[in-house]
Image 1 (tube, helix red, strand yellow):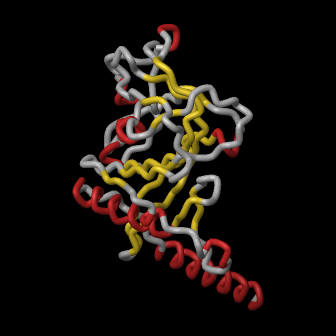
Image 2: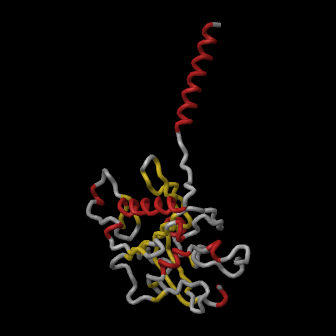
Length: 244
């Protein structure tokens, strides 16, 4: 009987200890002040640019602390990033741009608005503060045609929402990421690259939450999210009427 009592007591102590460990884990709480959110985004994006580089195909890679193979690569922050007034940052990869290429009209309401066919990784993050360590966390994939399908995608919805889904209740801003459209107009697209062409990515567009959906409801349920786009535009043309 004493043994049974001791087993129960040991189990209770173990449960209490485990519960205490669980209680010590403090979940990140979204700041009420939008200015604090914007500051988190800015600090976390800067850290992201310091901790990552572009490999020989233009893919974003994190620096390794144990592998010296990436020691000669420059940080994203050293690749002449351009920061726009909205907070959007774009980086054009040297030697990977079409010459001359075709201008991209990213205004969805324009009569010359551009269709784009792209190979792209679109990743979303939440900038969090963990005991003073502000960083981009909670990564997820919005789309990844490079690693998953291996085929270019045409007009992803977050770039252009077709007329048949746009309504008064769910306007373009419910689907489209304005910061992506803003950054993409600084790039030119290729024309008629075969789908089989291996990606040689043109660069990066980083969109803070204030230039994406901020705290507004959206199709992807990604309030407060920052976005990182790593891409190549395989083809662009004025969008045909049948694809508007």
